[in-house]
Amino acid sequence: MKLVVAVVQDKDSNNLSNALVNANYKATKLASTGGFLKAGNSTFMIGTEDDQVDDVLDIIKANCQSRDQLVAPISPMGGNADSYIPYPVNVKVGGATVFVLPVDQFERF
Image: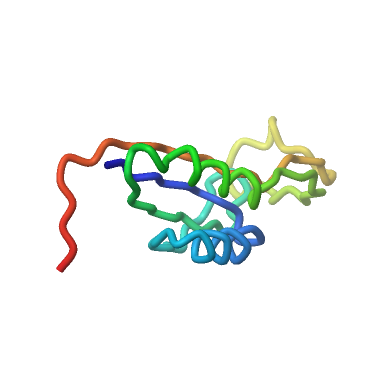
């Protein structure tokens, strides 16, 4: 058994949630916040059998695509302004960061 932990952008979370339900995968969705853009994310925890991990990864890949977004930087407050960029920058957002972890024991009560 494996635990798939997927951190996805909030914009992708509803599509991913619906796709997982349609494929009969149970998932727990947690609200989270990214460190770089300070933007909302959703973290999915999906328990699955070893032979179904590739199917889950395919569903995540199909529903969480990266894209370019123009981001206005936050001005430094009391920090070092040497690395501050005063104009909007184009960054890649979306996609998914996925961890696949072994599960020693699983119980459902």
